[in-house]
Amino acid sequence: MGKGLLPLLLVQKFGGSSVATAHHIAEVARKIQQAVEAGHQVVVVASAMGDSTDHLVDLAGQLVAIPSGREMDALLSTGELVTVALLAMTLEQNGVPARSFSGGQAGIKTSYDFGRARIEAIDPGPLRRALAAGITPVVAGFQGVTDSGDVATLGRGGSDLTAIALAGALKADRCEIYSDVAGVYTADPRIVPNATPLSSLSYDEMLELASQGAQVLQTQAVEYAKGHQVVIHARSTFLDEPGTQIEAEPVIAVKPAVTAVALNRHVAKIGLLGVPDYPGVAAYLFSSLANHGINVELVIQSLSHDKLNDIAFTISEHDVPKAKPIVQECLIHLKGQSVIIDDKVAKVSAVGSGMLGRPGVAATLFQALADAGINIQMIGTSEIKISCIVDRSDADRALEHIHHAFGLDGTEDVIEDD
Ligand code: ASP
Ligand code: MG
Image (cartoon, rainbow, N blue to C red; front, side, top):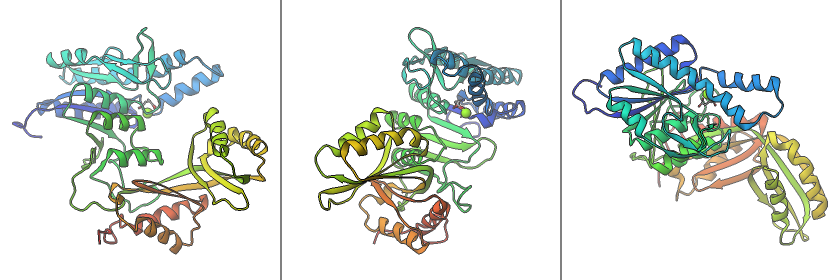
């Protein structure tokens, strides 16, 4: 960014690990200063330092079993306030006029759902006035205020949402999300060492990956970005890597069938076997689970045989203790034969909008698992995703084989239209 370039309005968000220590904050301040000195207007959004939000959660847990939502949010919102005050004073000392803002001071109005509040409105006035006065606003992420002035937080990882929502409200040219990872990869590099960084992917692909366990961006934030058409640029804070652009549908020459693969290890499989086949069975089972707040993912029902059905589904491993008594009750009520619960499975998924209307993608994936001798227990698909449930001990290998089969490690040609 040299002089003479068109000045831009940028939102720059820095995650917890980017501001973990005083030293990190000084580095981040230098980075912001560079953008300001290049002539850009910058709105900074920051997370709490390092793991400080976790420590606050811990602290509350040492005193109170079930703290009130209002007080929990009053507590958790302080982490971000520490960072923005430190960052603003560092910028000022370096000669960059800056001012810290709480979420409320930045005009962010939220719903009353403490701990997972939605952003209901943003008054861009306060930040616009600061920018017009040549002041760089440094906004506390993850929070806003309700109509009655109570602080409410936006769910864990919610600083991403703050940044994206502000970028939308201010009509920023770019929303840059800085963290300790250099963007989105074709797979988690800790599992698949030859995963490669993606230069771009679509909101829908990112949403599928995020819901499958990729933790680069908060899911609600990506949904908001999609709804408001905010282009996200996910980058590393301290490495000069190009990063990943997340936008409507990237224009690239040949769209590969699969953009990335993801692994969710924390999956459990539940089966109700020999359930009489009549209308309302699935409705009874799944509304019982839903009424207890249990989210169901893949569902399969076998073809009816002898007027009996097997129904299997997956849930989060963490919900197993809650789900057990419910499915036992359903088994009795529905007069089924038995229940199986396997909490040692994992879900591997291949995601890509390039698989739309392209035959053979599922076959390639299944063949990759067959070649590796990995048994597929369940299969689920969406328009741009294929998921398989496999034994958890096979999960890493499954991911690696699928990644390789679709040429994502660059060792094979990308499968193209034929
Ligand atoms: N500090 C909050 C959290 O750890 C919000 C964020 O980091 O985005 O969840
Ligand atoms: Mg955090």
